Length: 231
Image 1 (cartoon, rainbow, N blue to C red):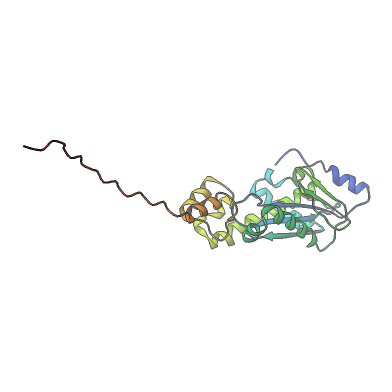
Image 2 (cartoon, rainbow, N blue to C red; image 1 turned 45 degrees about the vertical axis):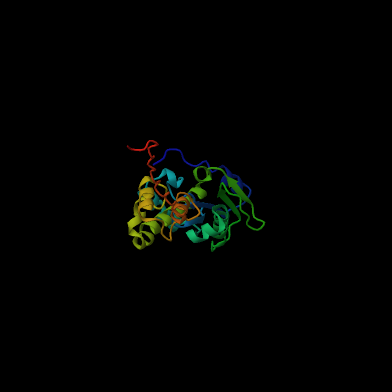
């Protein structure tokens, strides 16, 4: 377990100003080659904060699963929003990300008074929204959201998506750009879960669609005639 806990600087300032329902927002799978983008929003109960909330990247899969149970059990409200690969290709990852983060907040059954979001600036009515670089490591509410998003996405990649397309071994790499994933892509080509606007998927599709170059016809060798006449 990481030793350095979130400082919660922005959360403390908001609570001091009288805000109680503070939503943390984050996403998982933004840079993945395949599978959905998953955004999550969490409002923690300040009287019943789960232990060991950290940035999901700092935890093992087992630790994330344990934290997920505690967060979903003890939080005031939590929600997720998924964006499939096809929509990411249609909108572009930046627009899809912003929309997912915003909709995750809107899906909370209890409306937050303030929002803390990792890196991106979103809008939520006239309520204060604070964008924080590395927010998942600095604010526990964002860290909690990162855990929810990561666990939900990993479960999807390891179960439904893996079983639908077993030859890509999504349960192993979760759709991220590993050497194994690259080898399987080159062997089988993309499936419907692959983001076709991303490299190397885009590169593979372009190579497949390119017309093969015609080999030039072999040149006939000309035999030089002797200038001298045979006697």
